[in-house]
Image (cartoon, rainbow, N blue to C red; front, side, top):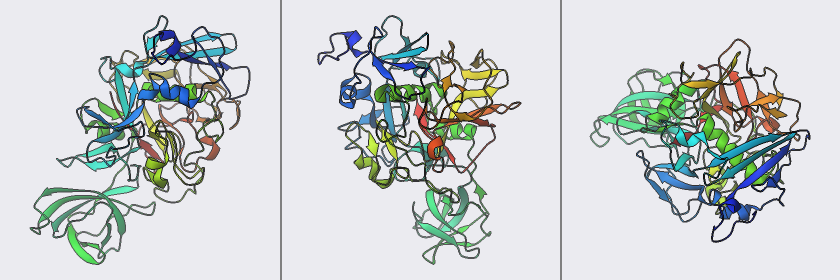
Length: 481
């Protein structure tokens, strides 16, 4: 029952599982059929035919959830720069089953509600209504003004991911010549220089010489210093407008990221814990190995071996021609060196590396992990409010290290919750966890960043920061459910 018939006439043939021998330090897994019998490892071409994986594909998505697809999973024919909607990846409804048999942890995925399988809670979040598909950002979120001047977090190619303390907002008036995204602007008095990320004109017109609004500018250094007020804003020494205020640095917390994503429309937000770990297990099931950063059994290191730098020192979305370099199934890398170029798995760029990504709906406290309700009725916030979460039986670990074990209890059995750190970057899960700090309410970020090296990866987790934390190393990825 292990082969997917072309006619799809046997539901059992569409169920694929992995078996993990937890007593072994090898990151290699075994593919299993519905009965738990070992299979020869399935190829990526096999997964390209699977009812779930063949429908993991890029699209553009309007604020109300209307999707437009390209000619393949890579998104050929789509406009991915945000002008026709956010660049997203469709994830079809997925059912899962797990069991622990001695040292073996077995997990299966199915496109159907086969006996013993449960719908992954990701498809119930943001309201408790069952969805036939959800969508995640093809890219890390970047900043975009909507038509009313609200700042939103959107997924689109060609721009810098929005990270803390690397962007600032500057009000302007007397705009005489249009300032465009990508322009390098300079304060005529202060000499402060930055690159324009987005422009909002709230009143007046450029042609009329009275455009008024706001600029979002990113700066090359780590210190976002105020411009002089007032001073002329110049592009190539030509005055385009004048400042009306000193501006402000744009921080980026987990709740802020959620709010910016939600500003795009209802049912939007940043990836929640159920979505994020669904993606993890879909990835691991396909590759049948925990070592995501390997170039032989994974996709590659991702953007994880760059210098620390100052400000944002990672790569813009779609860097190194990644949009066209990946295969038609949406998987591959950019054309740069391993460790410095984006990885893309089935249309999702930088699932690990480049920037840490906030994951909402998961808080770590001394008594246990608080996790967004499985039935989808919990209000998503940072931190989670009372009665909006379920709590693990086990208390969080407090030791950092490479993950060697996962917490297996009813609430966490399909999540990635580390409970042992006896591994290395080439054994067990191969990825690093920064654990809960005793006495704090900690939040979750995942994936690692451009300077993370071997600590990055699909399973990398950091639960050591508090809700107010903002960093130049952290972004977030939009979702629509």
